[in-house]
Length: 89
Image (cartoon, rainbow, N blue to C red):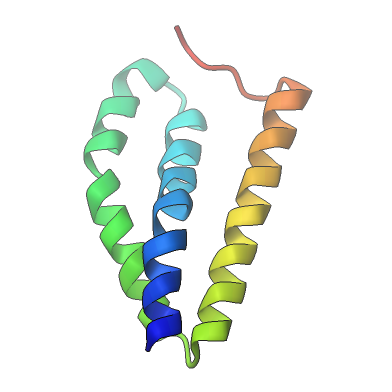
């Protein structure tokens, strides 16, 4: 239970930021959809932290959530470096 709790507490926030960030970045009209996504951030964060307790062991929670975070950060870096995603001013 301690492994799942620490995975939820330490990996839940960055994974939630990635999910909401991707949703806001990949929307067609960033100017009008970013604020609603930011308002939904807390619900996404709670869902991700709750999802950590669905894993069988704490190690699996750490591996899956950590892997998803690393893959998300790598994808964000790739999108930014390749110029596929632009932030609306």
